Image (tube, rainbow, N blue to C red; front, side, top):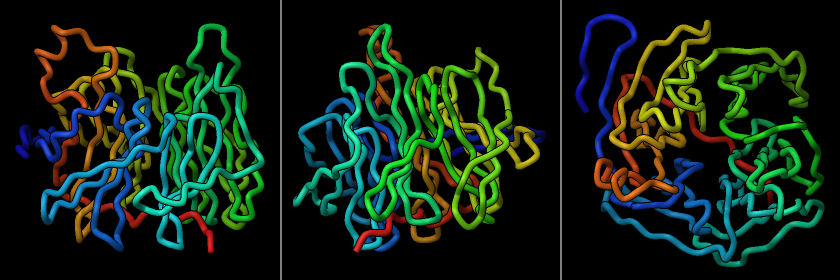
Length: 301
């Protein structure tokens, strides 16, 4: 990683971490217990694992597109599949689809999600057929009950919660920014939606996001080749340049949670695009000088 410039925003360059060549890498999460990075290749239906200590990289097939994954308190995975939720072991065995929700896979698919501070798993859908019905952000409770949190969504994307459990950051990509909700610190109920920050269209489309230990909001810019950090007051503080245009999400990892991993995609890129971006679909990293937080876990026994 290299840093340039002495003013604000700070500019960093990301380094190659994993030569993964995913079609659509997303939903990165650091497993603190096992010290490995996990992510999905959505359309391929693969869940990847990378151990930085050994450089070991492996994946397993789910058998259907998988929009997002999260860790569980029992040590396994919770998954947002093409049209519903499931749980599985970390190696993909004993995959069990959960009842209670089956979306219209002909109109929408699950896209991004993560466990919340209250032990639930929040994941949203996106339109992926012309004229498809709007998507929705759902919450899967530990008891298996599914509720709708946000309706009328085009592309449900990045999401995360503040440490005090009073703020929820959320991206519906075509709206061109990050929205902020008030959250009930005891139940997670959402209210008072408003715009946190606008992303200028030339910079790219807001995609996945994560919050660091200081409350900074890191958002991936699809089509912009960047990851940006915004301070809690909305000021742009850091730009991470990524040598792949389709930057999809990010998560902190490493023993000290000081390594920022960045996922990218090669979806629908032309031959000329791939020649210009040979590492599109790979995983990148940098050490931005701030640390992340251990991910929340879905509360299953």
